[in-house]
Image (spheres, helix red, strand yellow):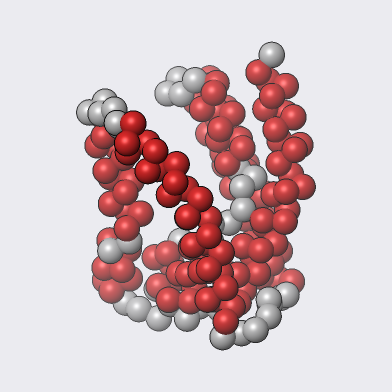
Length: 171
C-alpha cells in the first residue's frame, strides 16, 4: 500500500526506495530470521516488549493527531470511506477467509489457533501508520485519519461478534 501511495507523486524507483527504508520491512525480516533459527527471546526482552506495546498505542494516536493537525477535522467523503471500509472489512476479510480455507484443506501450514488469530486480525482497525504514510506523502492525510478512526469504532462493534465465532470453534 505504501508503494502505491508514494507512486502518487514519485517515480517507481523513488517509491521503491521509500519502501525499502520502512522500519517494518527490517522488523519483519528480523522476526522471520529469528523464527527460522528458533531463537528464543529472553525474559528481559519479553518484559521490554510488554512495556513497548503500550507505548506503541500512544504513538499511533499521536501520529493520527499530527496527521489531523493541519486539517482540524475528520474528512467525511463517503466514496473514499466506502472504498476503505469495503476493502478492509469486505475484500480483506474474504481474502483471509479464503486463505484459511485453503490452508485448512490443502496447504496445512498453520494450526487452528493461528487460523483463529487470522480471523480476529481481519476485523482489526486500519493501522495508525496509514495516517503517517499519508501525511508523509501528502496524500489526503485527513481521509486516512478518518478511515483509521472509523475502522477503530467499527472494530469495537465487530470484535465481540468475531470473538464469539472464534471461541465457538474452540469447543
